[in-house]
Image (cartoon, rainbow, N blue to C red; front, side, top):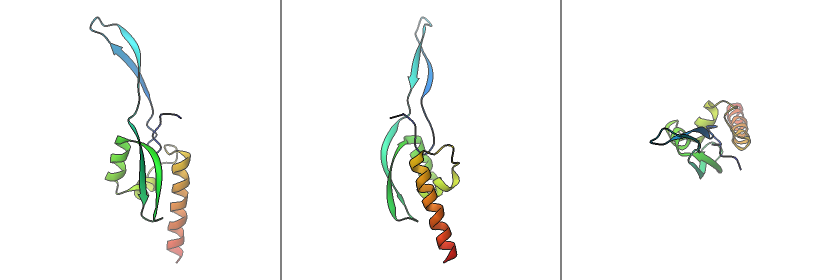
Length: 98
């Protein structure tokens, strides 16, 4: 299972550990991923994602899962999140038609 946030696309970064003697060794910085269950208000369902803590704060800042998915580009989202986004768009079209 890859270490990538399903909503923001944030992944691992590579850098150096630098010692006091200025020796550099490779280091991998992993995102702080948490398994969370987010509620969709339009679909009235909950969905499970592996989200970075920064991504979770961004979702809350944008007013919830529905607003976040509709604003975010498809390239950043995982396959699971894209599926939810398509369901949201379909529900939005059904609401507009009714």
